[in-house]
Length: 508
Image (cartoon, rainbow, N blue to C red; front, top):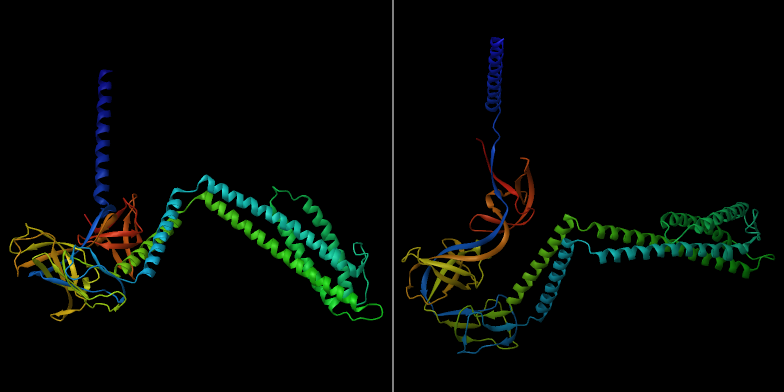
């Protein structure tokens, strides 16, 4: 008995051991047998700051003066300085006529506020008061349609009962008779048509008795439109008949003229009724769609469209601000005015120097700016300078004070001379020293960014690949804003914060 039990336990352990060994072997086979999925290098869409820098090499020169002129011509309206005046950096020296641009600028500022307000409204969703307003519009439109349906019956009853029935004897009976003679076919059409209309009117009266303020007005509107169209067709036959009548001993011209006038009035009233019902139906449908839209709130597509409207308004505002700034000539440096040729009322031409300012600084830096970077650098841009004589550890602060409007060809390449001024007195600077210049052309803060190498261009559009949580990779189109000097790019639209963009694919 004891031996049997021991033997049983031994066999049980033996089976468990080999079952575990088999599971390991099978798992290892599948692991090493299956192909390894490729690893994807990704980057997360995150908020950050982007700097766009332009790097140049120049030389330190003795600082003397800057000659200033407008980027575009115009009529001088203000001269704020005279020769010998001391001015600080940013002081407005001369102004051109800019009332038209100032007006457009205010309008653009208002447009941007309105577009931002609309965007905020879309993002917040519907308000209870907005829903109530839309519901009231639906109620008003419903009542208006009911009123037009009832008014249409009144117009139709008047058109037939008061305007047309005078050409019949016993018009509302089962056998109406024309009181004048016409062709047998027209006589038959008019008399049989009047019988059908009488039947239609009775059915219409019963239907309208069921129409209440809380009824669905659309079926009643459909029936009304159908009745009006039949009456209109009948009046066309009546008009054809009376217009062909001629006076004789049994029919006076006065009677014929009365018939024609009545038919004309009836047709006008029926056409008006048809248009009234159609317009009322359209207004009600529009009100109902607006109510549904308000209740549903804004879709993602609507928000994106409004975001685009805001960006458009911002771009327009920035453009006008740029145009406005070009009507004001400011001193880029602190110093003394040494020349002032501007006079109020005169017309000045673009790029002509009219004011000169002698700088308080001892030295300036001059460099040649390639035409490819011309649109990036503006007067007033800040810059950091290192001088070869002192190494990269010593950084000087400077800013752009002028850009020559005329090109300078250097080794066959068009360049434009850029002049920078030290922001503080730099006793270590000497004339002739080589300067390494980093101009901060543009910067944006707290924006969505990704590495530029994650972006591909195809047929003029920008694309990125997105790695989804389930491992699936999708390609989507994006809009790119500022490109940073550190290899990152601004995402203007198309991506959400936290998404993973694919940079490259590598196999294990």
